[in-house]
Image (cartoon, rainbow, N blue to C red; front, top):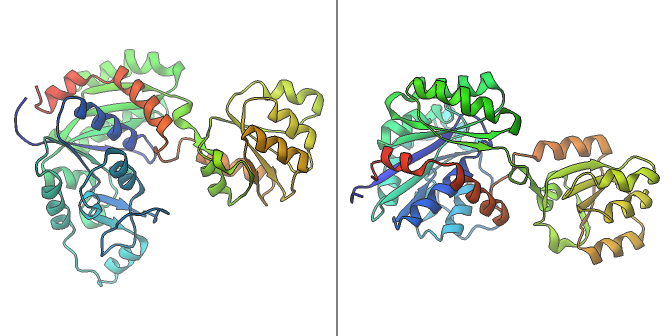
Length: 368
């Protein structure tokens, strides 16, 4: 192992593809090798101000949630201004188009990278949500690779057989020699044979290294009860100290009470959506593995239900939306949530360590 500074830039072909998870897995691995690690997200797009921000760049009104989460998780001492030097909010983009903003964005990122990599052996950089993001300011993934002289690892989420191959080949065309390789993520169990035995050999034969094929995992696609509350703009009626619980399944309680219990037993760790006047359905749901009850139509439940749910630690969420709109809203969340929950992180690291070809990756990065 050399004393040179090494870096890997993790980007993706689609939003919510697993970049943050991969960065966390890589940071844990490199730290296990006793490497002094650092993290950087050169550019963040449309970031929202999180509720808890210990510090933020003086010139920025936005702080990237992924950066803040990793800073806290790994106790990085670097200022947020270096860890995420450019935040492209709608307001900033408008200023650029009007000619009111005169910032050398590439120099800003380059200076921050110099600070991050100081006294570090390995830096993990997190890229954009697509291969074209931030092209407006010359900070797209291809630009970053050239600017900082880093190799790129592309996370390609499985959508279909053709899509995953097209995305991988497109990555090779876009990045050329700067492409380190790919990780194929969220592969359904019934397509693992195709990906491992046909797709992977094909891309390897075309000079594209595939470091891992990661199966789809229901827990990793889950959402927290708190995220459901935020997404629905709902009111928590009880058990507010259980909002970190993870919801893996979604079920609608609109059946007769005779079949409700049998129906709810089919899926564990679920959110049950039903009307506030259906006390029989609510009680049946509480008899099974339920993480929260979502009551639609702004109809409050019977006090007996509230007491039972509070005692069991099952939050009840009240929403003004009807059942169909509630289902549509929650389904959008699944697989598109931030990777911040400790249980998710621990489960992913175990899965990641099992699937990742670390020896090959370390060799490609010049660590061996």
